[in-house]
Image (cartoon, rainbow over all chains, first blue to last red; front, top):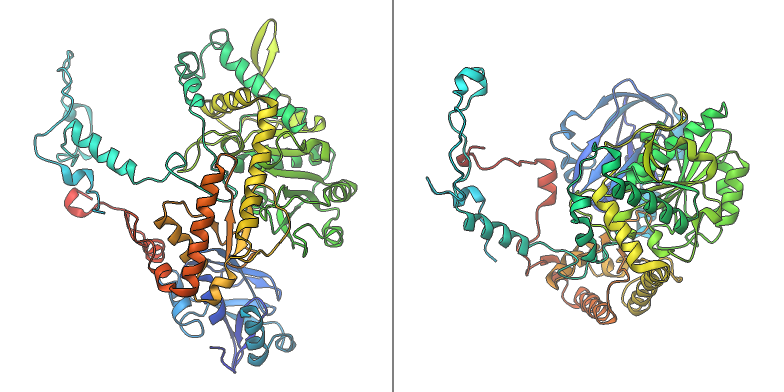
Length: 128
Length: 485
């Protein structure tokens, strides 16, 4: 549910920093809490954000929620499939449901994010 | 229950209802009057008799849920009963059969009604002036923020932020964005109110206003309201109050006395005019004296022995609605206020608060209460206990439909997990509240013992659970192609 090779935010986004650019999406827990996602609004390619900035909006049958970028950086690609198939976020949150690719401004910020074990503890606390 | 066919499916060639007399004028050949591209050979209108139409729509109406049918505890929407005397007055020919652009001396009664209603709303809220022009709560908010910005501008100040607690109505941050302001979120303190230290941190030279929903969407009165208002004013910002929940305070609190600068009222909530279904609302806006000049116009004023429409000053933000607002709703609100009187309005607020607290107390053993203290006109439960049993708040809401009760607002406010926001209003009797309690307790038992019953709900409604996700993801609202769609 929470792959070991990702980093996580307390707001339930994930980052895959295996190579450049980094890939960002929302977690299994986030998609489950949202319920069926019906729409996602993503930024334009080229937009710059600081870590913690709102970079988009995800809308489910239940609620509209802001998306926060885990790291400083520039958006270099947005997932083109999500406009027609927002359900990918529910079906494959770590795969085809990815949201944006980011060219990070630095490296150090990854250390501020949670690793999989810490994120699992957070989810367990929230579910308690 | 059988599904009702489309009226097109009832069609039979040549069948018709009313047969109007043949026209007495010379018919025009469409080909002479219109370009060919504008002429259709085939217009697939249903061919049905009057009784077909009557039965079709009456059957559909029987499947509708309204407060005239059964309980409708939709939190923050104040779905109180709308007294039918309101409809009698709204249909008075002198008020119903007039035109907004008639000469003023022929609509003195209508102008007098607007003038008097604004005065009554001013008396109820304590504000010095009220405009009934905004046609919805959200428009009242927009007009209020624009007036606040115009005031700052008149003092040579440009302020770019609006502070909005996360317990506010969802329209508040939307209004901030619509007004071109940056929305700064204020997290709710553990007791459900505003954290003053947090407020201090976020107030600054850029803050134009605080938008406060009072009572909040947690159904709680802001106990630190005086300190909040003092701090906001000290920073040079103004306090906007979302007065959608004024039903909790009628005759008990005058918001202007709290130091609030601007507030809208939802006449379609607090003052029993019809709403829902996207129908017209009315979002009257009250202001303190220093903001009067910024109100929209034209305004109804006394002139000579009667009433007239007066243009407003250059400071005004201008007209925000064609004519003078949703006049029919103003007539209904006026009727409600006059038929209840001061004592009746206060009793309405007391009853609304008492009923909500009655439900809070009687359901406290069955549902979690994230903010467990006396509430105002609505109470927010959390379906967190039921979630551990594998049942979501959505399932609880759907199950209520099986008992003929409209579901409460769910998943809002968003700061409460699995929220159930229940507003019974003052118009429910003790007996109907007790029945609601019994139904909610039964649902809590079902969650523990037979969760699948809740997941399958509703089973007694005209339709089963709808596929909202597909309806949102791939909306298709055309008629089937065989009917010309």
